[in-house]
Length: 465
Image 1 (tube, helix red, strand yellow):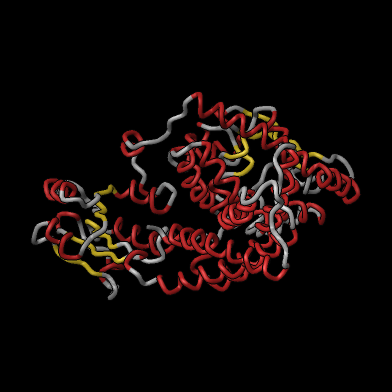
Image 2 (image 1 turned 180 degrees about the horizontal axis):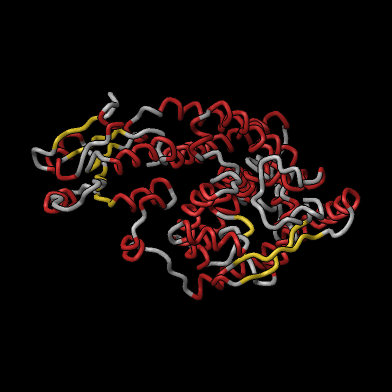
């Protein structure tokens, strides 16, 4: 079980335990009934813990960085709890209003107070409990890694820095036929490397492996019968690229193989999924535009006051199937920003206006792209659209770059919620690893999860240019 999943279970259990206790205490203090006579125990009050759980996920409380830095996570708990309580309060008003025959809980102030107090306590308690579990075997998968070369070192580095678990017990099984041992592994006193003298199954049993990862630099002459014996004995066996994709949640561009892309699962798009995605795009875009219309109008006035007209910035970008379209954004740069031609954005770009800097940090400049979504040129979730001239450069430099155009370009995306803003070939390579993961594992549920995580990016912007 991953660390994020363990943290989610702790939060859910403690929230559900804390909620009735918090209501009971609040009732005792108030000295009056919580619910109206027509709806005793109906359950709409459960929207409070449900909203809080959703926001804990949306605001990144189950991400590796938040779990690794408990002080930062504890500092964010009060904000998440407050937003969750406000969301629960809003839903308890909106749902009965939309369904007139449905009564709602009375004593809303009492419910709100109980939610804030109870969930703040449970959120802090869950993270303190997690600190006590960090060294438990449940949170330390024991991997038997076949090979100890460069590929194995890359795997160890990625797991250490990006893995879904905070730590891994890794045993490297090496054979001279796999190629030389990587010196970075050989010189690390914490690394265990054993020679494949006995059976692979015996080694897996000796260390109590939870999984076997096949990662030799040279695979010819590999003991396939030994791997089959491990698999039939109940030990999961994963190829290097498949394991990386699952554990790091991106595709390893550095070592990607066309044969793996060809034979592995994914890259499937049926009409039903596309129809659901389009329905989500239209309904969510209209809802967002309705809520943000006053902010959009105020931002448009600010652009004119700061640097005159035009208000909108239109630029040719590439979307699904390599088609070109005109993307719309609020103008954040000077009118002569690209008089000398297209260039990558830079850190602290001097071409950005004062108002433009604020619009970028708050993401308000992106709102006009919702009209691109409504017109079917973009989707809410997908790879960010690039300019045609940059697409040509990147397609020549990066393998499988054009495969990101199997879906529509997105307003937000898996790369955007996992990687800070970048404007270079190296940044494009890193973002492509996330874009390919999204395209390969496309689903409407995945879109919803990305949209939820976008809330974190908006509230705590990182690397915006």
